[in-house]
Length: 298
Picture 1 (cartoon, rainbow, N blue to C red):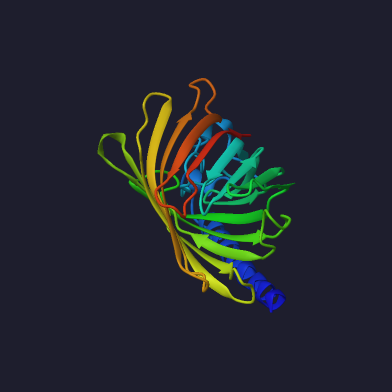
Picture 2: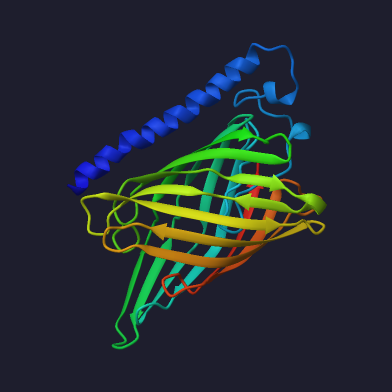
């Protein structure tokens, strides 16, 4: 039954990606049949945006939020943790997870569409039973995530920006790191410009996940609200994140309070350094997560 559930999820994910690509293609065809209307109608994967016409660098880092912005067409962007550590202290067991880089690769297809792939090449998960002292450690690659981001509004400016981001997870991780299931979902990131250069971010997400016991599927709902404000070349951010998992074995809701800071050097507008720390707010959420990372547009 697990195999049937996984197989059934593949056409669902394929349909989502097909819908996104067809929508992006339609938007491009419509603009192609319109008299010259400025940058949004000019550039594509095979006619890249010139360097002097690039939008400001926009990433899905730091914090857990996803931005509604896409990569300029014909350009490539990499965003990655350089190091990421999560420390969990629940149920008498210490569980630590370490990511040694975690790259997301992005390619701009049209002015409002990019495609993305993420896979952590080295993850180590260690667990220690505090009562017995027994310790286990597992190391391997992570799961492969494929995403498409379609901006619906605000990619070229405006007070509100909105996007849809369907994704599918391909189970490439070994047992102890991943659950071996094909899973999928969709995000709907929203960004709102507020007075005095403040920015509000919202990232509702729906996931369709394998039951813990196997053989079925259940919903998982994620949401977050964040605020950020540029201070010179730095942008600090703060957010509240929630994750409610409706597994039949028992509903679990996690909460975290997250802080992030990014820096784009004034003379290197295509490069960003960032870091952050996330604090779990209840017993079922990892106690602490810390990370540093970098992004580069080419």
